[in-house]
Length: 336
Image (cartoon, rainbow, N blue to C red):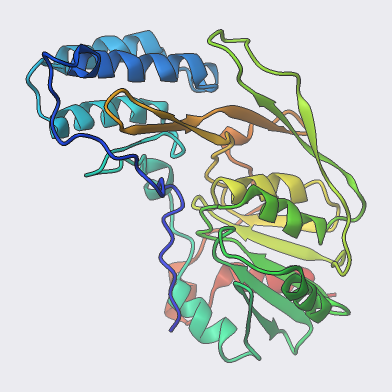
């Protein structure tokens, strides 16, 4: 059974750094200096303090007493990781040669709403299953509904493969796109897939880059638009999401909810509305943090996640009966 373990919040390359700090010879690399540098970078560049009610000065006061001149690299990493996790943002993390920090409660404190084995065993593989460029798809409901699962927006495909998938949807009564546990990946792929569902070319989001240390230091808002592409599908469509629908998937959900034929179903997405930027610390570690803010056309800050049109949780009773009640509810919605 094909499995992909995708850790899309991981920073792929960590810059080499010394394994020990020569504190006397390199004062800019002592623990206090590294702490100050990290705190200041977040203060100047992070865009969601006000949205989340975070007092970053209080955070500094909380963690600074834990910094000591002779502390180990591991101990320093732990303090800095805990500090940046105060942003409650899975796009904010710290990478060293020996560890990478992650903020996981955004995912772990919510229902899973997916049993991948059940989906594969009862919805994908027995039903004219295809794998096309990272897209799993099969025909359900007497071959009248195309079920399409995309595990990650980091999975590559060609335009010809995307054409094939949407040609297979052509003429079908409905389409289900399952993005549960899709942690994101390529923003361009999110736009790419959304363009195949667009009823017309249109703006779908508004984005701003933070360009200074002040709370109001942002570039002029820029509209993000989709351009309708063919072959596409503009029939009734259900997009399944959960709290692990994050980052580029969160963005995709915000875009397609502008299309009249699309219904978002499941739980509120996990957020991740800021495009990450990276900064090297004085000791060679890498700090990644959100550097933009993005809004839906209704003003929703996408860092908050995108709420579904239909709130549906995976039922333990349905799983015990070898059924996914979220897929079944989508099928019922797509029937005449």
